[in-house]
Image (cartoon, rainbow over all chains, first blue to last red; front, top):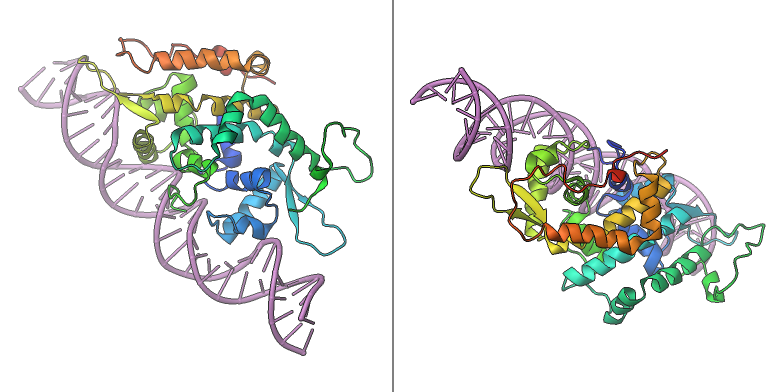
Length: 160
Length: 160
DNA sequence: GATCTTCACTTGCTTTTTGCAAGTCTAAAT
DNA sequence: ATTTAGACTTGCAAAAAGCAAGTGAAGATC
């Protein structure tokens, strides 16, 4: 359907115009759980996305404001992407997908203990990830955001 | 990536091999929320899936045991599909997608009140849908107009 | 009982999107 | 000055999607 065309006002359909393909959610996964955040790191993922497709998906995700480019410090390092709050809001979806696959795919590699914790204390797991992810989002460089409470300092790391 | 190829043991990737495309989740949506369950009903959905793609997705979903064909009663009616328990287990994902789109897409048509209830009493909403969907999983279908049954009108109403 | 519909697909062909290899461009390291 | 690394782009073949038309079987209609 020229995949990105909006054809109805259905929320499911809207979501699919943003990430209804085989690759987009893998990039989000990498950003969310795998600590990958640069072009070459995404390329290194096991599934082997093609370079042109990766460039295309990154551009779309940025356009859709699910991810954003981190303006690199003056020291020469790789360009990095990060999730926006809109991107972080996909966390529940991702956790549900993990839960679903853990239940229905015998070959899925998710630790027993993680799945158990996810099912027992979903809100807690979600909150933990969310805190970590949001800590990395747009730390407005001039002002100090007051939300420091309960956030371990290790969250400061923006690279790897 | 020849979309269905399994390239890693990642749960997100597994989920994408099942429904990582622009159409599959729309079929699941139709079954889950719209009361559509036959080939022509799926075709009538606003997004306008192509006939060959629909046939292909139905076959895959059946193969993946997300949906199943309802053996038709002796009376001549249209063939119907229904969600398997594995398919019903996608309900949390779907609700999260609705929530996400309601939050981030101004044009998404989900009723205010439904979204509010979804956020306030997620477990209740989920349980309600799950019960309805699972009730439809086993029993032989009576002759019944399927489109009328059990779609909360909130899902149809537009917000804004 | 021959024709008309409806339903659920298939087939064939065009267009779009992927997949893959190679190349470009920039900046820093050697 | 030459390599190297990162982030892409380009070109082309292959796969998938889109579209129109056709098929076959069952039931309804004339």
